[in-house]
Length: 389
Image (cartoon, rainbow, N blue to C red; front, side, top):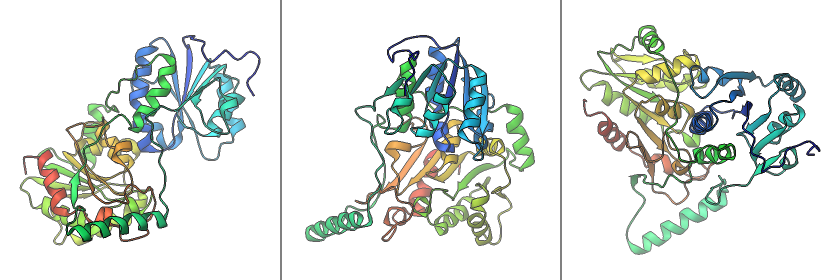
């Protein structure tokens, strides 16, 4: 579907009005920030507009890579979005999502140069269909039958050998396959460096001070944030009773307080944690469902450490400079660990089980990937990041 006046993919024309189509999930959006920063370095003269879902618009306030933010909602049709984009007269579009819809939006908007990852069903809509990196890893969901075969095979071998190698561990992993490299790879078409930098979000001191006052996160306490939910599904959630055990222990540390974080979907689990802490600690704050996205960012910045499942707030915390203890079960830290891969400010914990990562929303067997992470091991990781307890 390329038009006759489309520039050839090899054309190197510095963009003047550059549209970047953002991704639709919070954690993924944070992982695009290294590519945006590198893009700003490579194209300082470009007016960079980010097109993002309205639920993520606040994330980009004060971000140095972005000149303008355009938003859309789930109600917006492709034609209405493309008409708005056409009015902006962009000369180049860079697409972070792999969806056919995002390519159709910019094709209908008649943006002359359209850059995105090569993907079935949309390559003819792009002028630059960028092949995947040679070392890129695709997320593949395991079937329940495959999971059972893996588990039974390993357990049978270990029973025969009289040993077990399924204890918990701290992950060590190479960073070259991390998702942030995918976005850097796309931005490199416009001259951006492929060398990663840490994901970055920006808050003002006024916003941080306002959060401390509004949510009573006084600096005379050290605050442990707990993010016990995970929107993707229960396979990513460490058991609530273990979050309770950690909260009870941390609340007893002199000078420490506990902050429960999450959205409206996390109200039930946070109420259960709050109810289990009896008598309630004096320094317990339940902020679930009470914050805007911007306020959540500021509240996370007020925390000294965040304990979290693999979620969007995990990435936000790392990007604003808060140390993170991240718990991985069904997903892979090689792909989505917080911050810059291997950053010593964070701890990534996962159990050594043969079926992980499975990338399933629900565990079809016994949830061993999370059940084998103990509260004691997690508390030790928090202590390593917070020697003041």
